[in-house]
Amino acid sequence: MSIEISVIAPFYNEEENVMEFCQRTLAIMNSMQLRFELLLVDDGSKDNTLLVIEKLAATHENIRFISFTRNFGHQLALFAGISAAQGQHLILMDGDLQDPPELIPKLYHQLQKGYDVVYAKRNSRSGESALKKTTANLFYRILNRITRFSIPVDTGDFRIFNRQVADELMKMQDHSKFLRGQMAWLGFRESAMSFDREKRKNGTTGFSYSRMFRFAFDGITGFSDFPLKFASYSGIVVSLLSFVLIIYVLVAKYLLGQTITGWASLMVTILFLGGIQLLSIGIIGEYISRINDKVRNRQLYVVKKTNTTPTSLQ
Image (cartoon, rainbow, N blue to C red; front, side, top):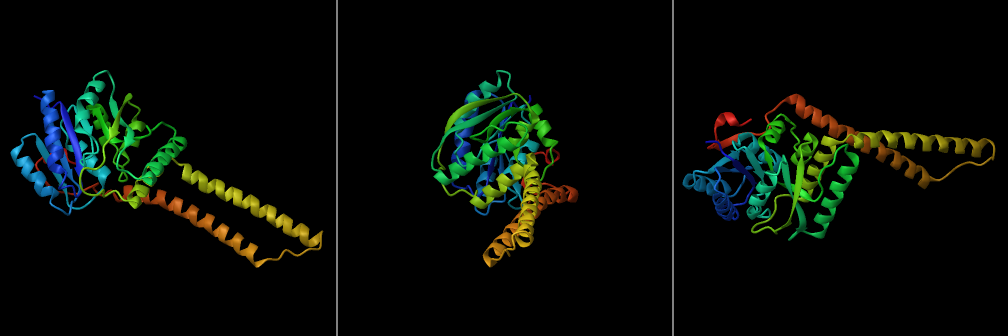
């Protein structure tokens, strides 16, 4: 008998949340009376997260786990879960209890209406700073403007999708994962379900602002060539301004008899040009870095311990 639903959740230093997450999720899944598996991915935690997961897996036959040798990142942890999942339908959610397991039945029933993907859209985000909310909103709206397809705004990775979507996702071997963008790129039929995101139950988030910036940049460079075009357009604009300035200097010198002087203006011009050049080189470097990751062809992650079928992992 095949597994109907695979629930996938990544954990990084979440020993205080693992037990409650599993208790609530198991209760919900058992109430649905469907064959399921709960797949927990330990993303190289430094606390006792793995120990708690192993104890739970030893007492619940529905719990399976994957543990990385180190922290490979939230998106790769989700991808590892997708690769190992056996369910006909897969659910992605965070293990910090901000995504309520009680929403799973509604997501599943919505999917049964003929959709391929049903994602949870956040009405509110409790416990998060105004800066984080503002930057997140700004990022998704900018990303939608510079990509050729629509990525749902105000959403995370909390969603359910069918086996066909999962199979297509596993063909995408990008090292810099941005799963919500990849699902939108696939073009399957999607639907949204609104919910109020709860604040973190215990502990502190491992998703710092630097990681958020890296994540945002991965999303932009992975699905848009706008930064490269921006570098090109900036070069054209600066070249035109420089040409106009040269004409102005020549006219002032030979027709008006004036000499353009000013150390401040000279330094501003040099710093401006230097800034544009460094910005352009940096943008190009980011895209070259993605190519370099692909060419090296290293595995996406390394599994230290698991109770899943070895052949199901990448």
